[in-house]
Length: 332
Image (cartoon, rainbow, N blue to C red):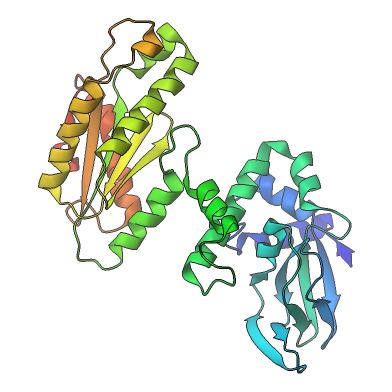
């Protein structure tokens, strides 16, 4: 084994950055992962782990060829996967804190980067770096969820663990709506066929600051929960409500063009204006108004990032124009 030296830190961070699981980490986060990792070498034919071993680390192949297989009762090998330089394996067992269910063997002399290093548990790393632990866990979960969704999962899709994983990755805890990760991934999925109309609505309360300033931030959270419940009640079978960030909510209309999106926006504006939030205001009559931005595929963009960005920029413009308004990008 060899630890990460100062001279090798840059090289290690570059290797980590190539991995989807670490690609969006900031420099501080990359340094944390690098300092908690180590390189290990394996000779051709050497076993890296066996079925039944604790899944306490993931591996990144720096050089070599790694075979993952299962052994049958007759001693035959059933190949599951093969990993080459620049690829990562073992993260699913690490996050599940479960035993390995396959064997990993070096097919050539190989060098792997192991995280976390031997004798260190993932929980220790996260405990020592609380400021970034949630970000690391979230990135792990997003990647694993995507792998499970797009590959032939080794675990049944309706298993309790998968259900809990989806809940953690795609749900907003405060409102019960979907979250930003879900919106970005789901919208990308819908755009793949390039044919069906898809619309994104983003909206923010024009007077949310007044709620926080007058009744407190806890009151603001309660109002967001009330808004979330109201939004859920409006959604059709193929629509999705999202808390995008802060007090900004969103709706993904998977089968709607500009006209249908405008009608839905009008409905949102009316419902929010008539919400009863007297439980928050202590009986005061407070009316919420919202400004809504709408972007439509393919009119305003052909990829998820563009459509979301255009809709996201509009509510603040609507508020500046007096609020309680609906805008399309062409009206900017």
